[in-house]
Length: 257
Ligand code: BTN
Image (spheres, helix red, strand yellow):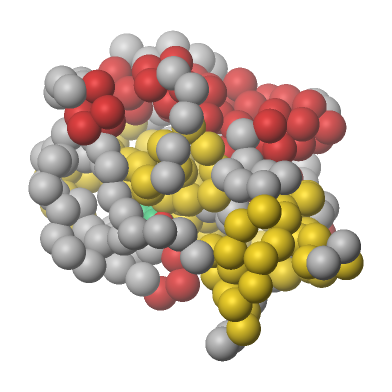
């Protein structure tokens, strides 16, 4: 266990900083497979990932030493499998809170797991749950945030960093500590069963909520209005007055790039 100066009760109290790793999510997954004893809230942070993973089998690229790439181990054994989207809600709420303190208004969650600042992608979340029976034994919450990087390769979609917003460098450990504290607070709200509070905050900060916007499903392009996110995490979009539900990967936002 490495000491740190994080506030809070458990998230980040055991902080392991790696110089280089394939992926912090993989590192935690492997440690769990090897039955390495790890406390709830353990954070694995990497200065450099050489095979960082994103949603939908995408790669997550991050310039070494400039950004936050870390994974939090949580043990939400109190959460039934069919309520696992509530963990996404809690993580999103924690991240929005922490980043809003630093950046002010403009921080949004683009369904399902992208962290946006206005119309640009600041980061993303990759949650991998390990299920046992009807509950979640372990959850690996991987978070990547662009912090001090200012040049992005062409194939990175729509990126922005904290430095590009604030016009100055931001201390990585300070931001990590704030995010851990805010995620812990939201996680404790989840544990107390106050899902309505998390959901309300999540909806207030949902990208494109209640706006007529262009989407794509397969080859079909259409305008729709996001109305809700269901308990199982589906996106509810109103199209010509009719409400349709979409699962992850079934609908694409047509952002201007
Ligand atoms: C996405 O937007 O597609 C999700 C990106 C998640 C990236 C983070 S970086 C830390 C952790 N380790 C990984 O390999 N992925 C997540």
